[in-house]
Amino acid sequence: MKTDSIFYRLFQEFPSIFFELIGEPPEEASAYQFSSVEVKQTAFRIDGVFLPNKESDNPIYFVEVQFQGDSGIYARLFTEIFLYLRQNQPQNDWCGAVIYPTRSIDIADRKHYREFFISQRVSPIYLDELGEAVSLPIGVATIKLVIENEDTAIEQARVLIDRTKQEISSTQQQQQLLQLIETILIYKFPLMTREEIEAMFSLNELKQTRFYQEAFEEGKQEGKQEGKQEGKQEGKQEGKREGRLEAQLEAVPRLLALGLTVEQIAQALGLSVQEVQQAAQQQSSNESSS
Image (cartoon, rainbow, N blue to C red; front, side, top):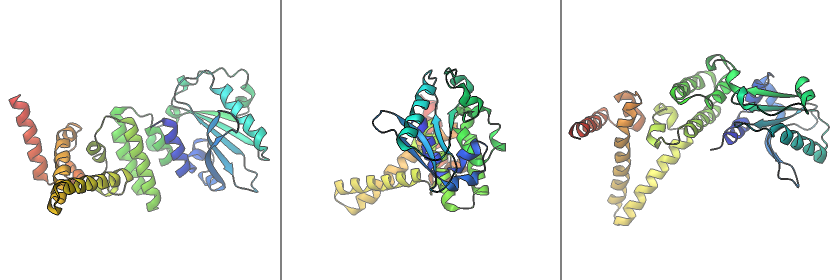
């Protein structure tokens, strides 16, 4: 998944995070609608635009996410903005923000646009300079998960899950944020298996996430298909159980290597402690005989 897609989803579901990023009250988000905007009759598309509600005199916010060095980013951005202004002729003022993972990625020359930066009409935001995640609002801390290194990302995700339960009262918002955290982890660890991603979450949160539900439905469909091929209802149920159990047991050694306890693995995968212990012993036996 592309990084800008993650940010698009984040700002669409949690627009308040953007206003926290730029130092404005998160409540400002209620007066805006967020979308990606294509400039007509050109190949330009602005990553994101916060459009104020009708009859509001709040400024329009243009957002660009840039995770690779690009010497032409500002030429392109200002071209997009001014074409948009020409075509739509809004009455509202405007501001812009460019989101970078680090200052070192901001390599474009500003000399033709320096006034926009001096006046702070356009502001660069460097995620690694926002401060420690524990001291940031939970939404901004979730953004920082995108740039966490692999050694700390899993632990930071667990901390964010705990904060989500403690700080967000809305069940719907809790699930949206959990799904977003999960999406970022999948993006950061593309080689991890489904079981390993699932095990990063405690059972209660995991069963509510879209990723888990899709995996569960997929398992059911695979079992049904196998049962149909055998022509028996018993085969359908047995195929489903055996297929899921085999995949779960194969994941046990990898999860142990991640530092999870036998009890945590059993809870995450829906196995008994005895089944996990047997899988671990089998792995040890195989290694000893090889």
